[in-house]
Length: 81
Image (cartoon, rainbow, N blue to C red; front, side, top):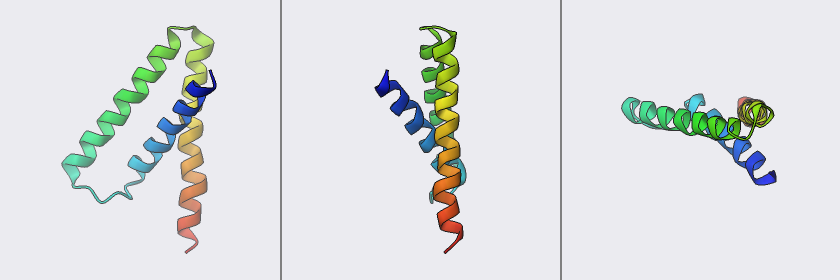
C-alpha cells in the first residue's frame, strides 16, 4: 500500500514537471510526453478503482497532491531566484 502511495505522488510530480514547460523539448515531443503521462495516470487510477472506490479516490488525491507539491515547492523556489 505504501508503495502505491509513493507511485501516485511520483506520477503527480512528473505531471507537474511536464506540464510546467520547463523541459526544453520541441512541441511534438512535449505533446507525446504529456499524452504518455496522462495515460499512465489514467491507468494508475483505473487499476486503483479495481480494488474499490476508496482506493480510486485515494489515487486521484495522490496524483493531485504530487502535482500541487511540485507547483508549490519547486516552482516557488525557482521564482525567487
